[in-house]
Amino acid sequence: MSKLYIPKPKAGEYNSVWDTYYATVDEGDIHQLLISQGKQISDLYSSLTEEQSLYRYAEGKWSLKDVLGHIIDTERLMTYRILVAGRGDLTPMPRHADVYVSLTHFDRRPLQDLIEEYRTVRAASASLIHGLTEAEIKQFGILNEVKTSAAAGAYFILGHAQHHINVVHERYLPRLT
Image 1: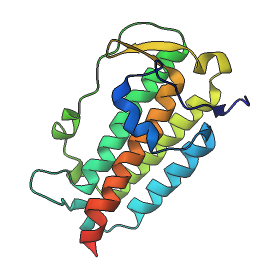
Image 2: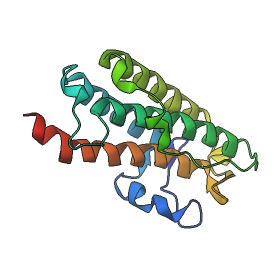
Image 3: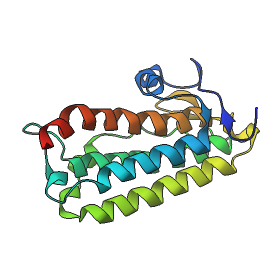
Image 4: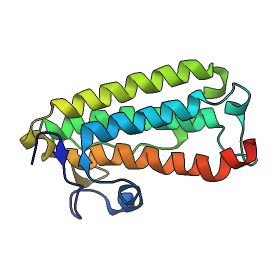
């Protein structure tokens, strides 16, 4: 195993409710996967106008800005959890709630600001994961009362973002054209 090649987590390394996220991403050089996906998401959002970024495909659904804000918030929280697990800290960490989106107002912010924040958060995530040793990436933390490896957290970042980008492609973009 090279330093950045991290196998996808196996059952027992994470909460099984994350299975659908892991199914959306390939295994490989985790640093390169993070960089590549980050560019794709940044390019996708950079192709939108400010008006398009406010689009909601149905009443009560998130805007495209809300989706990006949720990806940012979730990634920020997961990198903290990766750090905790990677350092061998078994302090239980609570669940991250989707309610965070409803507690802020991403639509008030310029799209370009959100894109820059996303780029910054993704670069920090990639840097943290790149800096972990082989032993640290295999360490576990406690998330939602489930032992979760730092590697599982790294793949969660990819899978969670990919899940939401798939939704953007399926439910938002076709209605913008």
